[in-house]
Image: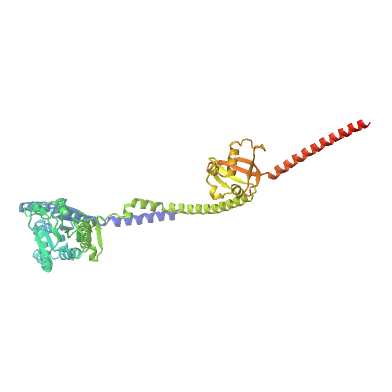
Length: 528
């Protein structure tokens, strides 16, 4: 009893210790300042990737939206500074995240007003200036994840998968982010100069852009780098840009997976959500690192993704890249179309195995029984053929099911000919005609004379047969019919006739003897 109580107490203390250790893990708080608004798909995907990773850690994230695409006045940013200052004072944060260029610039410019002493982490910048960080004296405070769009590589990919290319349009808007990409685009244009014609578009109205690519142009393609604001400064939502890409009459290549499945052909694409996950992993390392070591990395989350339907539409061949290609909008395979059925079959497969084994066993027994039945039928056939009397088996409709050799001999036909036919089909046969006439009047099975029939054999000799007809019913297949047996009574009939003749002769002899005795008596009387 004491031993049991000791074990229970030890177990309770151990569980209590483990529980205390697990819940004693301190929650880390992260403030995410998003450059854009809720619904701006690029930043929404980045944050979604971060949150997916944070869910498995002790990190809690809070998101603030700057909405800088739609509002960018100095007065607005001053109000944001006041708002974020209240946010930072009211809540304790262990790290501040800047999503994209506007939030990063805002934090650097207002770091004193916001009194940010926590580590700062930026996401999505294409260019990073060490000098700028040094000017703000933040060398040991700022880390980040650069987003590098594979502009040069994608242009090479376009030429490789579209060998007949003669003109390439490159589209990049006039936003601050577009300015960052502009440097890399110009470097790429210098490298490919002379190989095919390039038209670099930065300043254009959205309607003019739609009209420009509303007609098919042979051997031309569009390389979409970025376009949110047109030359009038108007911001266009993703669904309108996606509609433009989908309705463009020339192939449209892209740099990230934002517009894949929305009309773009594809390319070597940045995985935006994975960019968020990778950034979250680095943030966790920074918060766990007590030495405040900064880390500036470039994201390498690339995938070769192509839209199967668009590839077929414009006769593009991504397999020329010799890379691992991922297709979207690909026709479903047999297994994908029948996934539920296959899963169901997989679940019931153990029962199917037993069922198949049972069927195999049943088939084995059937084959075994079939062999025995075949042997029995062969035996019955031999037995019937060994009987000297003709025998025929008819069903209830008068069709011949089977017969023995003697019956075939009687009709002078083979079993193969008569089987499955009626006797009336052989009416020309002399014996059949007699037999049919008799069977029509066949009533009394016990009357010797009425059951008798005279038929000629193939040697033209007459034979007298007594017919015995028996009805049968078979329960398995629900069939019925008659079995007719012909018994050859020729010898008996002849013997009977001889006996009758002898009897008649004896009677005649007796009568003559009596007459002789009468005449002798008369003569004796005369003599007397």
